[in-house]
Length: 367
Ligand SMILES: *Cc1c(COP(=O)(O)O)cnc(C)c1O
Image 1 (spheres, rainbow, N blue to C red):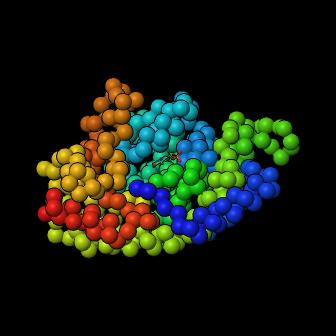
Image 2 (tube, rainbow, N blue to C red; image 1 turned 90 degrees about the horizontal axis):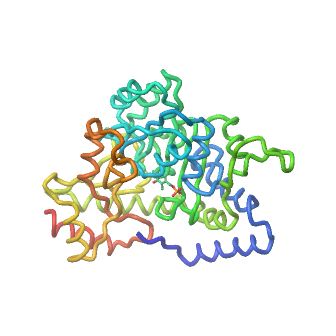
Image 3 (tube, rainbow, N blue to C red; image 1 turned 60 degrees about the vertical axis):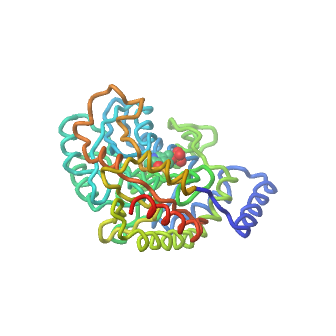
């Protein structure tokens, strides 16, 4: 993908950056406040701008407190979800996927909760920008045991289920503003919380645990701040978020219509009531299709580069986790999904012409 800013967007960003430089207030100022104010109505709650999605996860896990315990994470997620928990002194274990809504499988979760007596938190990931209906089962399992749920909503800014937005389900939620995500501030993240107490603590933690009194620190925070320059870029894009979502929706509709009838590829269709933010356009391949070979042919013959998978290998197969246990035995669906899906290019700035070429290439290879 390529991040494309139109001229008007660039001009507005530069004007805001000019404001920052002219004012000399470079961090935690007007632009961050403007960015947070732009985000709040989209998420339906107060938002805290931070330096990254990982920073937001670190703050969330610090508040819950995970050191010395187990944190359950999905088998299908970005490395940072698990790495953050481990860096904060927890050990992760992995939960299987349910293929309907691409969420955490409540049965697999129950099984893992029974296997560990020391689970401090469960991190759910709204894979590809889809909030799974199975989240209800996940929340029930955790509520019964008094275990905190954290949403790694890095993929899911603006996604909804039954009119409820990502970030509304966990005790805390972390969003990423990395350039490939549906909303970016070049680098950055957003944290939301259900309770004001958590929110206010997060606000303190992002700035070294500083208290109201100058130079007094009551908490082990860190520098998890978003700079004014990043906020200047992010605030423009958040104002254009609805338009960029419309573009993604149009692009998804185009693929929906044009890939019908392919015999070796079907689109993944989110369950009824789910409004994806179209972060990824996921397609399932017939098991006989060799994905690596397909990727190569699409690139060499047609000049078509697919988007990155979510993800091409399950987390427990990452080199860092190798040799731990053998979670493969209970992550059957996670593994299946990893091996048999691709993601078509989708991003604002992708032209209809480009999409035509993608579709033509798919018909050339997977009819
Ligand atoms: C992108 C991403 C992150 C990390 O966000 P950064 O902004 O790069 O720190 C965490 N979790 C998931 C699922 C992601 O996709």
